[in-house]
Length: 264
Ligand SMILES: NC(=O)c1ccc[n+]([C@@H]2O[C@H](COP(=O)([O-])OP(=O)(O)OC[C@H]3O[C@@H](n4cnc5c(N)ncnc54)[C@H](OP(=O)(O)O)[C@@H]3O)[C@@H](O)[C@H]2O)c1
Image (tube, rainbow, N blue to C red; front, top):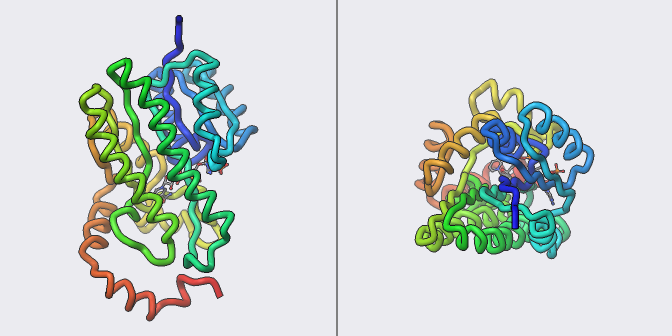
């Protein structure tokens, strides 16, 4: 049976996922772009095949549904694709205490970050194991290094991704499959509501990185078989500082500046 080797990237119509897809297409990987933006997927299909001369497969799928991973898997089997690289990147973000959160958003986040991410690793990982090669990169976050009140659903789901990825890495090592967790810090993307966070200012003051820089660090680290990648010096420093900060200090800071973080 002839199969087409591809790099599968979820959430590849914007931000870090799009930049990862671009880098891999430049390296002449065929790509399978999965996202919930049909028009952007069409535009990228035509752009990538023209500019990079690679095969571009697209799948329009809401990855927060419970059967999303199975749908992606069936698409891969039906189209006789061989997933050489899996990048679980799709994600979203919201601020707010647990009890203030919308239950719909909360379960969407759990399904997308935890359920779909881990099941895609299971399905694609099985084939990689059989072939004795492959790369998996799961996008976590620096928020995974601490318990963060105010973004509990986000940070804790990213903590799951980091822990899951480390365990999977150890398991897959025996089979020649390389597994990496990418933990970006603040990156100027559509993840944030532009009415709340000024991306241009964030970049100008060096607080935020560009999506292309983060993707570049991620792909390089993935091919170099790094376990965990934290792109940027400032991000690394912030991660260490957050790990050193005791939880009582976070409690006091929240108490002092509560209005800044919470909905009225
Ligand atoms: N930006 C940061 O500061 C930062 C920091 C740490 C980690 N990260 C992580 O990096 C990853 C990429 O985020 P980004 O910053 O590049 O933001 P982004 O530009 O908003 O990209 C997220 C991508 O995921 C897709 N997506 C979201 N929900 C989806 C769903 N239910 N089904 C299918 N696709 C879905 C989005 O499509 P739609 O726009 O159509 O929803 C978009 O293409 C995320 O996992 C995020 O948590 C980002």
